[in-house]
Image 1 (cartoon, rainbow, N blue to C red):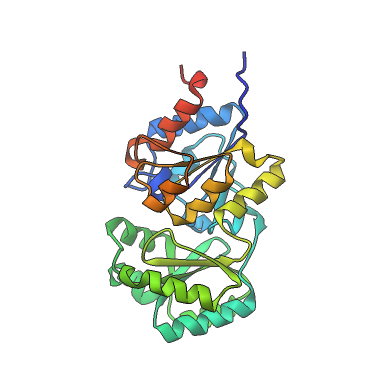
Image 2 (tube, rainbow, N blue to C red):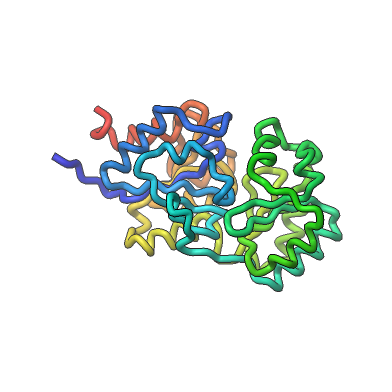
Length: 283
């Protein structure tokens, strides 16, 4: 006899939430998600990553259909590699951002049609930005394409930029974030890492991506669960029917959650919590 549940969709951040320190998931987490999906609940990874920067381990999750990327700017059909909904940054804003970051002398990244691009000096040596550990260095080199003339590249692709990222010394990030918010009030700005200021369309944010997805699938907000660990997850946790921070989440994120997992991302925190919420499927 099938057990009824009020939840119809689960949204989960990837880095430091669903993924462990190696940037992957365990068999325990994979089978947990597959069990959830097999009972008719959508599981939707929701990430600040560009589509083609998503970890390979997602392809091993049987039944996974959709992913939200670029901090809610894009809703994608995972296996078809098509975009169901996308909100790019307005061209006029991109032109201003190109000028602004050039004056700052900051490294930047842009996401275009699911692909991440970065300046060649940073691609060649990601340690130029403090805060890039070994995992992050490998991530940059395997998911980004290097660009020699970033300003020209940005202007040539101004119509199609999903996300614009300013890379900064962690100690200066709060000050620069405040300045950038003041200069670009027409955008959505957040941070998943201290050294990254992530800018997207004003109608973005993981919570907006979640809302758009639920509208497409006829799912009510109270029928959703969301997991996260960082500042760019807070609005998603607050918008979900049940917002859950993993044990390793930032203090700000933990305060915004309805509950906190007992285990961290390195100990299958999301999967363990799902088995607590849906015990009848794991007996």
